[in-house]
Structure formats: C-alpha cells, structure tokens
Amino acid sequence: MKEEKKVIIRGQRIQLRKTVREDMELKVRWYNDPEVNKTLVLPEKLELKKTYEWFERVQQGDSREDWIIETLDGKAIGLIGIKEINENNKSGLLYIVIGDKNYWGKGLGYEAELLAIHYGFKHLKLHRVLGGALENNPASIAVINKIGFHHDGTSRDEYFADGMYYDFHRYSILEDEFYQKHPELKERP
Image (cartoon, rainbow, N blue to C red; front, side):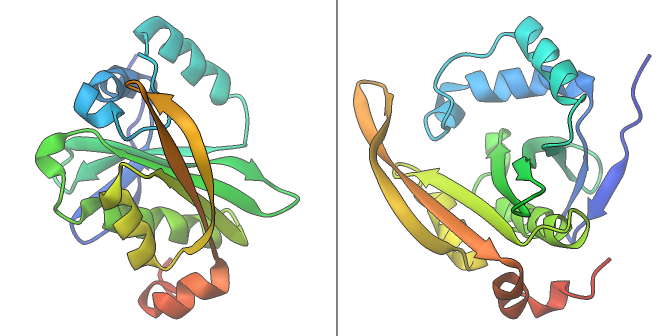
C-alpha cells in the first residue's frame, strides 16, 4: 500500500512533504553517490534494507521531522529535516541533502532551509536551530551564512574520509535572530 505524500510547506519554487518509506530508495541512491557523499557527515555506504529498518524505527519517536524537497510539480530533489529535537532545550539540528545534482547551485537549498527553519520555530516551537557543515562544502557554508546563522565553533579534524581529515563548523540561529533577518516569514503560517 502506498503511503500518502502530504505537502507540508509550499515555497516559491519548491515544496516540502513528509518523508515516506518509498523515499528510502532515493535516500540510498543520493547518499551513495560519491559526489553527493563527499560533503556529508555520513561517509559509509547505505544499504536499502537497513535504511528501511532505520526509517521504521525513527517513525516511532518524536525527536525528528523529515521531509522530501520537491519541485512544485512533485519531482523529488533532496532531503531536509530537523533531528535531535530536544523538548527541554527547545532545539533541533537542521540537515539537508540536495541529492539531484541537476538542482545544485540554483538556490533551492537556501529556500528549503528557510522553510524548514520557519517550520521549526513556528510549529515545533523551537528556540534554537543548530546547523553544521564540513569545511569541504563551501556552498553549504555560504547558505548558512546567508540565512544568518552564528558560527559557534570549529571541531578540527573531526571527520576522516577519502584519506583526509576535515574540520566541522558548528552554527546556531535563535528564533528572534531568524525573524530579524527574514521578517517576511514571521507571519507565514
């Protein structure tokens, strides 16, 4: 039985919908693409069976929200979400992967991140959204800076992949900082 693919947030050029089990095939393909994977914090290859099992497990909890990024005509191009949601501290960690390389460099990741962060503040009642990027992902760092994240620090040589160590940059943005930088989103449902 196919699961309902419900659009949660519609932007100007993209929409976010809840991730369903069927999407795990795309996740595995995207994460296992060497060009996509080299900037991720998950260097190992994904296996479809284990990814299905992971998906079933995380559906049981309330510590994350996961969406598929789609074009407005419904073509899946990536994943985004807020994980490690901490009810006590009102915080969560933003992640994004634009898996379809035909959509790299078009500003869609920026739009998706704005929509997800807004959802986190408005609907999940978060106070702080965390983010991060490996040093070898300047596009992600540029988006993080454009959104207005604060650089909280750098973990030197935190990840080892392809025979090299990479620094990991940590960021955060508070609700009031986000809406000061993006007031047009404050009244958005």
